[in-house]
Image (spheres, rainbow, N blue to C red):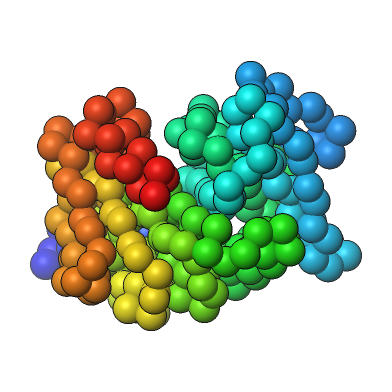
Amino acid sequence: MSLFGAIKLIVILYCIIGIALYYLQEKLLFRPTAMAPGDAFTFNTPFTEANISYDENTRFNIVQFLPANDSTAKGVVIYFHGNRENVNRYSKFANNFTQHGYEVWMPDYPGYGKSTGKLTEQTLYAEALQVYQLAKAKFPQEKIILYGKSLGSGIATQLASVRDCKRLILETPYYSIASLSKRFFWMYPVDMVLKYKIPQNEYLQKVVAPVSIFHGTDDWVITYNNALRLKSLLKPTDEFITIEKGDHHNLNDFAVFHQKLDSLLEN
């Protein structure tokens, strides 16, 4: 093959891969598991469900886990989960908060669980705001904690940038979706083609509430160095908690994670 032919082939492959990535980016970023409206959740803890009708095609489903021992809730944790499956995958983490007397509200994103509608970045923000407003009808803002895990960290941070809360807690967050994409697709104009950008770095600078970030040094999904870039954006009273040897999925297995989280929830 001639040099010209080789260059031509490289350009063609570059274009084909780029086009494929553009149209497949939702499948790379979101991995939902849908449920029928009549399907039943089965959890080993008390819970209720709430639904918010947003428009004729969009309904947000929220699972509301209740405090242990039927005690009166001292507040609510709005938990924005990661990009895989639905609330069923993350329900096991509700006990981290219910044991401290908090309700835990876990909304599923459109296409996840029983939530319906078109999934867009703006819809994610709109859902978060709708859930917050529902919580605000029951709890004052000083009793509302926003919690974001992985993908959900950017959604929680955006909400905290426009609404007051007691605290923002982030588990395995990212600097921005664009920064994550550039790690793998540096050869493409990522900022121009991304449909979902979620610039957590920009939102974090507007958050007035106290912020606590948890991240593991062995996280290969969202690297520690990517999350560490957020540290310079924190207020002097905020904190970045490093979990040595922690990865993207196992921070809940570390005693230091629970010790710090418990101290935050006890205050």
